[in-house]
Length: 285
Image (tube, rainbow, N blue to C red; front, side, top):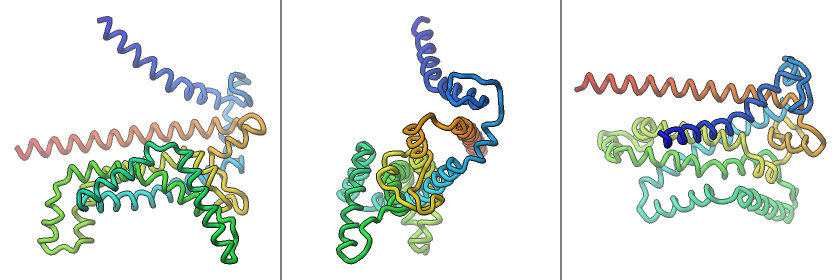
């Protein structure tokens, strides 16, 4: 009995520590005070003001565009890499597994600094050929986010390949399908849950990233000729000058609600799929 009470108390304590700050932030999104902790009366004004704040809208647009583009590229590279490693010889497969695990456990600052050194080195080579030595732009930022996300996509797709019957691909080839058609019709549907999961993780990593963005960004996207601002870099820049704009609390609330709704919808979809599968199994029996 005591163990049960302690276990439940621990779970509730963890949940409170995780969600209490978010709930406080949501509560103060309905007041116009600059500082959290000072209640200046209930108001919805932060929400319309959010969409009128040009800096936040540009940063939000940049963040979403970079996340979607880098996640799409990372998903393609990571998925093809996992498939290639799965059908490779054991030595190559073990080598690729090792090289993709290192970035996952490696410190992000190492990845960011390494990319910066590489881009500076490439810039010097371009300058020696008569070009501009400063190459930091949207493309360097995109490469940085892809380097960050590809290993996580690989790790998500790999278990689905291991669960798949390897003879299915060979059977499709024996029945006359081309390698590309067998890949599209046999392998891809079997590993699609891992691909979707890898894509979502890549989007999350990109949305949440600050270090790689700060080291590899340049001009481009919605920022025009200025350095690309994402939500993380914008918050960091605002903190240097003063308090964070109160409109950010409204944006955080919207993002949190959107994530909760997405999780609920995905959970319901999976629950319905499991029900359909169990019904099909019962009919087959």
